[in-house]
Length: 63
Length: 350
Image: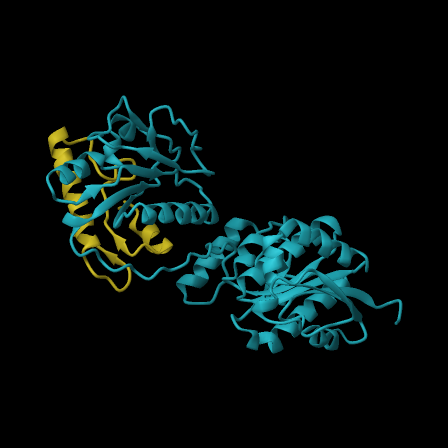
């Protein structure tokens, strides 16, 4: 899970989930704490789905 | 023998030294006068200019299991002949042999102050460990390449002995990671713009700063069901218990931390913070879950959405951290995760 996807692609990560921002990849201080946690939950769920997905090369899970 | 000939000592393992195969890998260092095995091709390429005066042979297992003893014996055998150049290998992709060739190169370079020429396949671990100490000619990964490798190594030996300028581009050796300052006739700005112009017009150009070599790993098989899986968190975002008890550096980290989060359901401003010096730490310090999602994963574990959250997380600071360092961290962390029965890892980076 990372914000700068081109770096993850360069270093060879295979399952990549794009995140929010460099200092808060899994959050957003502009949101309320409840909204922020919901956002984080959605991103982590996407990562879990990526872990359950068969890939044959680098894949960016952008939705 | 003409006194003008330069002197070469050659280092070989038990196999190339004609002692035997894996069953002789515990062979102790031994010295022979003149050339042995691949040294014949080396001598042929050197012709009248130089002479392989001696060959030192040591078993790969003996070397790697008795590094200090082996090295001091080998170094003494080499030093006795007062060589102008030392040649080790080539080792191609043989790991223990490559490490031995590199370690001998290092000892020679540091103690005898004479140049060392070797030959290895790019992925031989000896390259990464010892590239600074030897001119390592890039070979293929098989001994079938001896025919091409030895003349390249010999050319380097001849030019080094003659005191000529050598470079990776002209002599085909692997970059040593050494920086040499010199004055260029054009400024950096002008060179950068001409490179850009070449690139935009589809002309060839050569970068002055190549990217490090990143390896590629085949994707792992997916996990069948996250509801049965033990999931671990690993981060390069520098999240640590508040106070950074292991003093992980804010940049160029030399270590990683492993911290117990059993029973922790939320990272708070009082308990966790970031040690990372490469991004604004305000948001991570307010709520480290923004980098390391312990809160949602522990909730998911409690509700059965994942099997469990591993009780330890691993963390380092990915800020100017050397790739080689990161690789050593990763090897240790991955092994521990496997030993602990972890099925999948979520890696977060900032």
